[in-house]
Structure formats: structure tokens, C-alpha cells
Image 1 (cartoon, rainbow, N blue to C red):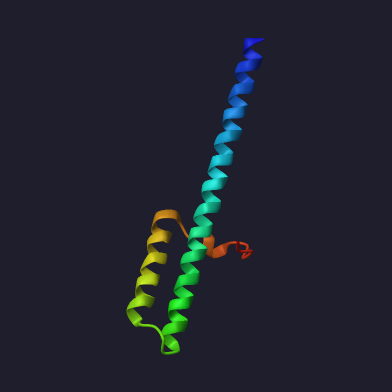
Image 2: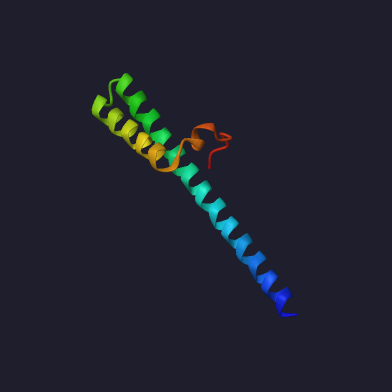
Length: 82
């Protein structure tokens, strides 16, 4: 009986770890999408006279830092947004 319980416990822990990993992935994708929105808004504002090249560069730097830290999977996301 203890072998069964050990296996069940291992399976539950594995499922929990997979769930945590998926939550982390979703959070990173949302963060990346938010950074892209900020970059787009900064670029739009710059092009239409209400923004600055510095703000656009800061937003681009933030996107690049996110890609370096977490990869670029959010760029290929489903596009469903939040």
C-alpha cells in the first residue's frame, strides 16, 4: 500500500510542478505582451508629436531585456491578449 501512496504522491507533485511552470509561462507571456503594448504606444506617440525618441528607446530596451531573460515566445503567442 505504501508503494501506491508513494507513486500517487510523486504524480501529484509532478502535476503541481507542471501547473506552476505553466502559470510562470503565462505570466511571462503577459508581461512581454504588456511591454510590446508600451513600445507600440511610445512609437505611436513619437510619430504623432506627443512622445520622444528616448521613451521609444526605453520601451525597446525593456522588450529586449525581457527577451534576454525569458525568450521571445510571447512574440509568437496566440494574440488573444488578456
